[in-house]
Length: 114
Image (cartoon, rainbow, N blue to C red):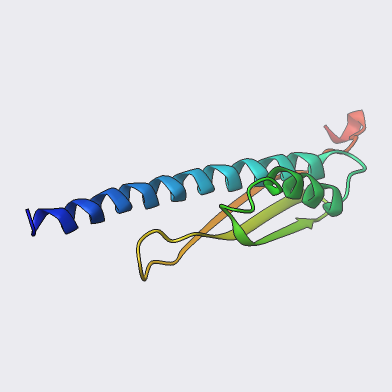
């Protein structure tokens, strides 16, 4: 029992850590996808995409810390990248999650350009 107890505790903590990582990754993916969709709209700006991503992540301050969101809107494409740190349940493990999304910018194209 003395040998099995620490191993069991470590395995339980590992499962919890992996669950935190998966949940944080899903949150970050949703935020960058929605931010990219907002910035893709015709007449939108990179700041609008960042605001949407920030709004989605605003309620997850306990899970995601040191969040960085980068939105780049060029003439034809929008790229949103986010990075955040997640809390560590296992000692000496530092977790960082990263997500990115990109897509074309919506714009009106006359019949001749289609």
